[in-house]
Structure formats: C-alpha cells, structure tokens
Picture 1 (cartoon, rainbow, N blue to C red):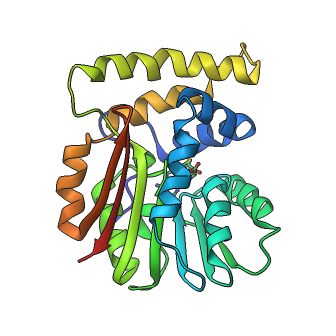
Picture 2: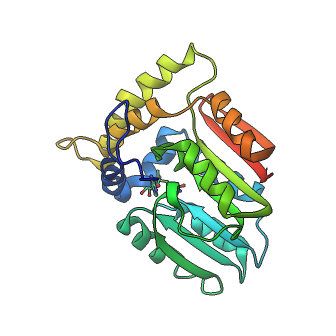
Picture 3: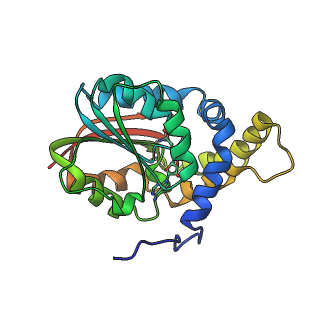
Length: 242
Ligand SMILES: C[S@@+](CC[C@H](N)C(=O)[O-])C[C@H]1O[C@@H](n2cnc3c(N)ncnc32)[C@H](O)[C@@H]1O
C-alpha cells in the first residue's frame, strides 16, 4: 500500500507538517511549556514513568522530534536499546546531540514514517509516542504498525492532544489553538514577521480524532491499562498488545 502523502480533508502534506515542525525547533520546548501551562512537559515525564521501561528493554520513540522524551527514556534504559524514529533528518540530528551523554544506551536514529515502520514484527518491548501521533496522516495505519512491531505483551504509550469529548469545549480549544498559540509562539521567538510554524497545529488538531474515537480503534489492537486526561485536551493512554 502506498504511503498517503496529503491529508484528504485539509490538503496539507506530510512535508508541510515536517517543515513547520523543523522551523519550530529553536523554541520548541519553551512554546510547548507555555501553551500547555506547564502541563505538556509534566505529562511527558508521567508518560515515560507509566511506560514501565526497565534496564535492558528495547524501546521505540515514535516521532522522537528533537529528543525531549528520548532523554527521559534513556535515563530509564541503562544498557538497553533506544530506537528514535522520525521523518525529519533535522529532528534526528537534534535528538542525536541531546542523547550524546547517554553512552551506556545502544541508540539508533532511523529516518522513516509511522505508517510503514522499517522494523521486523515483534521487535520492541515498548513503543512510545509523545505529541507525534496527531501529526500522522493515516492514524489507523499507525496503530496497526505499532501493533505489528510490538512483542507479545509489549506496551504502547501514546500521549497527545485530542479533540475534547465535550462538544462545547471544542470551539474554545479551536480558537485557542488557531489564534493564541501562534501569537504566543511569535512572542517567544520574537519573530513577528514570518507566519508562526505553530499555525499548522490548528490544521493537525482539526484532523485529530476525539478520544472516544481513538479508544474505539485503539482497543481493536491493544488492551488499555491506564487512561488519563488533563485540561480536556491532553490524553495519555497505556495499552498492552493483544
Ligand atoms: C510535535 S513533534 C513531537 C516530538 C517529541 N516526541 C516530543 O514529545 O516533543 C512530532 C514529530 O513527529 C514527526 N512526524 C510527524 N509525522 C510523522 C510521520 N508520519 N512519520 C514519521 N515522523 C513523523 C515530526 O517530524 C516531529 O519530529
């Protein structure tokens, strides 16, 4: 099956998504922290904690980006193996630099797409995805791919921003993401001339499932063990391969 390269509804391409994310790299952590009122980084730490990573595990960080979660994972792994996958060379380079001090961990940096993971079946103890699942263009295919590469009883943790379950909150969150987030990012980067790379967040958010829809598909492949939500938008789920 061919990789879908453009989203049918909003027409943005995977290259556009990745291009915007790359432009966001210099202020990524700060913007993330401010727009989520500090919750984004806190939930990331919590997600790694809940993944149950043990020394010696083989872990895939799906959409590692600049390696913010990868570093927290590396601290847990000891002499384990960490595979950082991303479609962007620049992100992989950033992640590689961040992970330099973790010499004991066997690290691999792989360029690839979520929808067609370049690994054999049953490869990983844990697949971890923080704030990356929503960027994929074919979410169902990503769930299938994660299921395929996980070992029997392997664990998947997905942390992301989903459309709120309460329909009344959706317009408010849409307004926030569409107008305030790009404005905040402009202030943080002190760049008022260019279009904010965070503008595409609104488009990817529009394409995102609500958490109920996510769980409907997630439970086809995984048994949910932990489900947490914060501020109506942030959802974290831990599941085991069935
Ligand atoms: C918002 S960043 C999240 C980075 C990191 N996981 C974190 O917690 O901050 C999403 C990352 O996923 C990558 N990405 C998005 N869609 C992808 C796809 N379909 N296949 C592979 N990588 C993708 C982007 O290049 C980007 O680095």
